Length: 138
Image 1 (cartoon, helix red, strand yellow):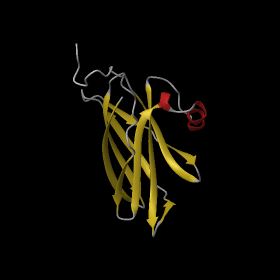
Image 2 (cartoon, one colour):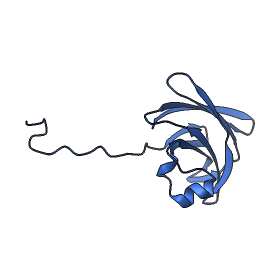
Image 3 (cartoon, helix red, strand yellow):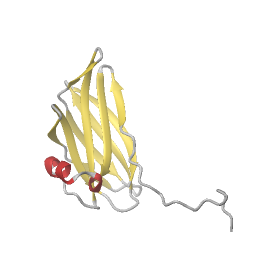
């Protein structure tokens, strides 16, 4: 039988990590991502205090202030929740970690195979709260 691709054999699907997302609030840049902890190097997971297993995803948030062409560290507090397609909600407890001279925020959520989660984050900078939403499939 000939497939749409002619004589080429089918190739297996490959994991492609989602692109990092960001939102801008004036001169504040908030970058965020969620990824399975199994995709982390063992040393990175250990440094972040995260279990490296199939049931855990890391949520990382980086907050910077744009000053001219330079991005500087920006103090912030981050809270959030993750919801699956059935509406089940998981609060995310964030803690600060040092990453390349910056202070980023990392949390973890429980995931199952083929989960699709919606993340709702609140990032507070200098008393002003910014809201960010994004989705990730696992």
